[in-house]
Image (cartoon, rainbow, N blue to C red; front, top):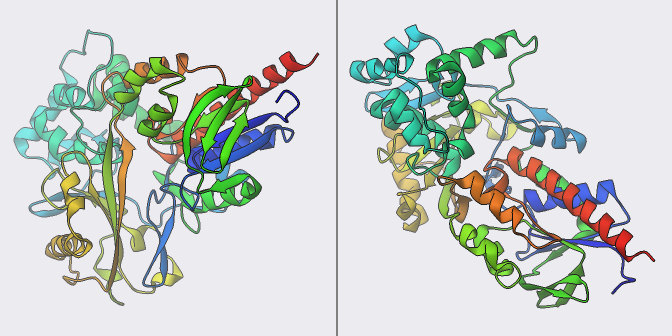
Length: 465
């Protein structure tokens, strides 16, 4: 074992695992990297499916423009990036779609006039939201729920109808259980520094305008779709990938880590676990019992994506914008992306292409229905809202069971404890620890790759006579 080449084993070939493998190999080609993936395909939730001859993203379809890490990696890999052709988000109301004000930060208007006249809230709701300007800021230190922060500052109506649908989408819903520090720390910072979320939004918008460079778009993606990132990473890691390699256990053996698989043990100096919290907890249970309790406090929620392709000539029925969000319980979907408006492509022709998100906290039972019922529920609601037919010409339903980890109160401290108590040479990476969005996963995997590489270097030096 002592004479074996230095090795890093990565468990999981999603964007976090593939990024970690790429970074380790790029920084030190002398380190052997092996990526163990239980399924028969790489990419995790970043994948495309064919609907009526059109390749569409079945998972994340873009990256947050304000977070540069995924964009920088794409450019490093030579992928051409594109911005949406249509921007702006709408809110589903009983009276139809209402656009969010143009000058907003995280959905909070920076223009008091726009907030005072915005039709997304009742007059009472708008007046309550404006009290944010005079309410005293919170004196207590420490984390609080995102819903608690928003309700305290802006009121229940603004929280439930306007902000929760917009802010909770990435995190599987339910702002009243999500950690403010782990989800939108900017809001907590605005209250501390500006004494108000509205004044914080005003300051953020002023800074963006006065920075001397164009404001970053809300979303960016590779020209051929978000899954191009993992496709490219998987192509570069082809020799390292082992599909169908389900890891049953991890244990110390001969001074190294031994990962037990059906095809035999894989020995490595360092291990990067880039899989879901439950799998990570199971693999670490014998070797790192101290992290089990904290791991169990990172629940997951199931979501689904409904892709809809309508008949030729239907694209003109869509409003100009990226999409709309839905207050909880008012429609079968929690949001709808206007794909053909935001990301036009020759393959669409004149067809309207939409992407509905379903499921999430408190609405997971939607995913238990048959595909046909889910599609029918979505198309009927869309037809009542927009001049679209009651049926799409083609559709696909993609379910992602337990795909979204939920950042509950105290999440950042929980993750810090987990990493502090990991055995030497074991590292964790992924949505549960580094960020729900692709950009956060890329940044976290880059940091973990550097830590694993440093650990291997130290181990090699200790073994050298």
